[in-house]
Length: 111
Length: 117
Image 1 (cartoon, rainbow over the protein chains, first blue to last red):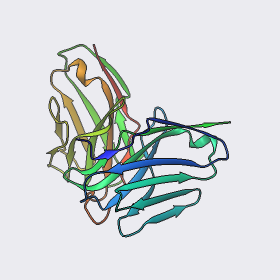
Image 2 (image 1 turned 135 degrees about the vertical axis):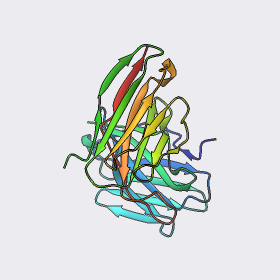
Image 3 (image 1 turned 180 degrees about the horizontal axis):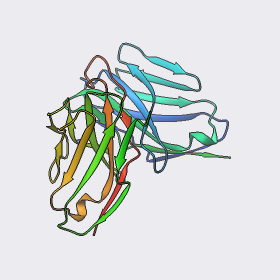
Image 4 (image 1 turned 30 degrees about the vertical axis):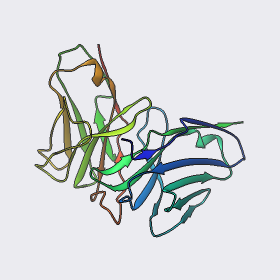
């Protein structure tokens, strides 16, 4: 059973607009969440994280929001740029294997 | 610093053949991991190591073996390759465990694409 779910396999956003990537989780033991970004033919790279004691963390154009009651987090990218086109993985810490990844969302920024 | 280096980057095997993927990190990280990425499946943990000489099973360990004889190296072996093992394999390392209450960022290698015919 998938504990970290990214229900949108792909998302297309116009350059300059806001990109919102969503992630849901089922395990109440998860208490730290991360977003990784992956370009083709490269390994994932860390983007931003948030602890369960917070509901928002911001780093430049990237903001992650956490709603613990809904077991939902989202990554906002404002404004979206062509270089943001990539696959974004949501990940959660606290399960048996340490880090559990979602299936990823392919973000496409349209010029 | 090179970070995490994986070799080879590409490999084609026939069913039943064996091979080893090598991962090397130069960051003095204690923890190392092997993941596989398949279309629509995300990243799934195969095996991991919490230090030199240790290994542990992850989510999808069947058909793979690992060894961590040196702190900087983590080897992933396929003894008898199967088409279901066609995938992109990623090695990663971290300073500490991905423990509840905190997290240490994983540094990933660029991946090794394996095709089993």
